[in-house]
Image (tube, rainbow, N blue to C red; front, side, top):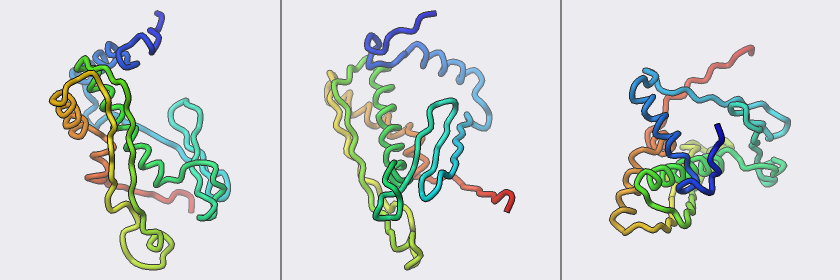
Length: 176
């Protein structure tokens, strides 16, 4: 079987593969949800290697001002990137399903972290209190279709939902 080149697919998406996968989920979705995994291995200092599936590793680090070597995005920057990427995938999937051609898509994300809380200098919430997102989307669709696409993306974003209604985090210290 020969794969179709991405530049010949609508918005670069193999819609047939997505529809087939969704069909399999409709027939037999895992009762506890579809599992995802990541493994993180400390590399020294604040640098960490992140492994997902059999993909090339990615990394996390801190900027020099925070004691890192500034070789990769830090975890809170990666949260912004994860949200932006999830939204972009949602816009792309939704546009493709609706026959909308994306001409340009860019998402800007910003939020503030209270670093004195992270450093233990005061009490409070160490994470983002809010994240501002600006979506720049240019398509061949009319405003009503774009508005409907936008609402659908917000209703179905796994990362957006995780950040809005955080998942329970259970951390076990092994071998201490």
